[in-house]
Amino acid sequence: MPTDTFRPRSTPRLAETALALGGFAIGTTEFVIMGLMPRIADDYGIAVQDVGLAISAYALGVVVGAPLISAIGARIPRRRLLIGLMVWFAAGNLLTLLAPSFYGFVALRFVAGLPHGVYLGVAALVAANVAEPHERGRAVGRVLAGLTLAILAGAPLATWIGGLAGWKAAFVLVGALGLATALLVRLWVPVQPPNDGASLRSELSAITRPRVLYTLAVACIGFAGMFSVFSYAMPTLTHQASMPEALGPLVLATFGVGSVLGNLVGGRLADANQRRAIAGVLIWAALVQLGFFLAADRIWSGLLLVGLVGTCGALVPPLQTRLMDVAGDAQTMAATLNHAAFNIANGLGAWLGGMAVTVGLGWSATGLVGMVMALTGLAIFLIALARERATPDQGPGVTRRI
Image (cartoon, rainbow, N blue to C red; front, side, top):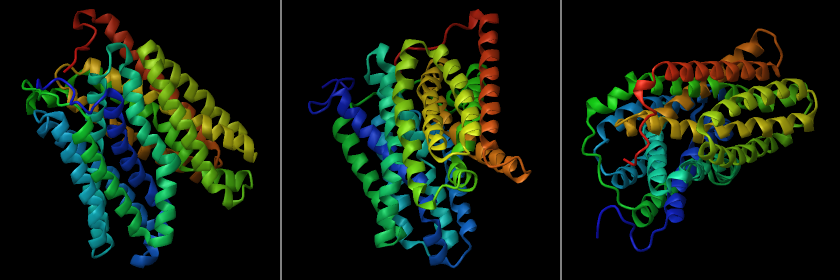
């Protein structure tokens, strides 16, 4: 059987489902720790805020792993690479059972984070390669929907299980999801030949390409505003709108619904017009984050705006497909760096939002931070487009299947 055809039991939708399950597992482990912080702190005898070190360790693993693993694994056949990454991810979570101390747990969170960005980037490449050319954005959106569904269902489910059976049970669940993903990828994802032209040098060249760097800057800056609002949404509504703490899970669920819808719509927008999609979503992000600043004094209007801020996830598919188009032969590196950029946006947005609250601007000032970040991201993108028009000899970017 030729290596570029489907296995008999596989279809594009089954392949996307298998890949999306991996995103669901990754999103679950990334967000569940926020709901388990008090239990982890009690078990290790530390302050709750100290558990934040484990969150930072995971994010650092994502940032370190994305360029390192993608450069090393660029010539590995993509299905084999995805399976290996999911086995690695599962092991990092299952070994949590054996963590001898809190710092051992932190180290394992770093290990579990290493394959995060590479898996999501390669999964997006595979989905785009399998789909028809005019449906690349939607295929990427469907795969990345697993990540957003984790906010809506995966993290709350794992938190509930952790509450019943101990917090380590949540990571056992995540490990099981990782192993299930590895199996389904083996069964449902088509074999794709390795990129024999890839090398460490060619993959690292992505870091020097102006179009790649501009696109990553848009992800780091323009997307940071969403995390600024999301990171403090619950304390904002609790302190500013007198929301009962019992409604806290509703905040997460509302944001999750918005994220799922935004991700799917973003895929369609990317297929319709990639550049307009990026610019349009950034403008939308600026408006809804300003809306959160204005609406956070009331519970239900605040919740509505939290959901609308979640729809800013529509930025992910067009940015992902743009990186595929401008990366040349450094496809794996560019695709995975996108997810490292989103983790940088996560940390940057949370830090700037916290600074706004600390200096006395008020809890809802995170919305103003978000608006400024979205408009800054838009400015960076417009500068990138101006540079492209000024240097048309560079071509429109590589859109062939690799």
